[in-house]
Image (tube, rainbow, N blue to C red):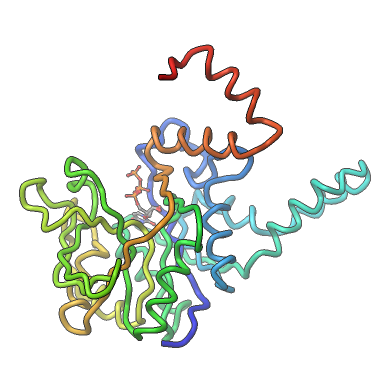
Length: 290
Ligand code: UTP
């Protein structure tokens, strides 16, 4: 498989779990420490060698594209004030990657959102990164999948082991481990009942796929929750072309889940030397550490 240079990042969902914070601000723009959630995702793409980012958006999400563009007025203000470190920070964000976008006019599910990007992706293998799933530590998340996809010339989905009581929140794979951490996918099920889950290996918002996925997506009928599920198209593709799953290393935060969102904020706060001790001190006032 050729090197992967494009990523589709769907950000058109309603973000109902993040209400009321996400009523007028996209949940992808909520901050984790000093950056919006989506910036961490785009940074992961950039560190993995991706050049083109395709956002799948809706009418209320243009602020996401603006974040990755120049803000000349603000740059002028910072320059005149001599705040050159801040100027550098905001320019870097505008220069990270090429940005393209396409509208998903009706929110018909993640699979449908990906299908909306078909013309912008063209006929090359591409990555998908879910816009509120954050991965940290070691080799950038999507790079872990790209390396296997290119070496094996196969489509690859990222998985992580989840607790047994969480399997009904994810797409779950049934696979055979063919080398350490790499599975041949036999079957995928979207949000299975806990007693029927084939494993605890959950698909976690990172994919590297061949462009034929669009043909499978075209055929998918509305599935779980009445949505066009990406998992259903992946199932068709796995059966006819084969597919691998890679158990991803590193930490993951689902920024659409409040407990994980708040944990991510504390995690990044604690990474910052100038904040760490003050933050720990304040936390100690109302947390009983064992
Ligand atoms: P989520 O399951 O997180 O859905 O979608 P959501 O609607 O955004 O959030 P909740 O569950 O209501 O809080 C996974 C990803 O797929 C995108 C979302 O923006 C998110 O990044 N998505 C989902 C779309 O782009 N379009 C859709 O129709 C559905």
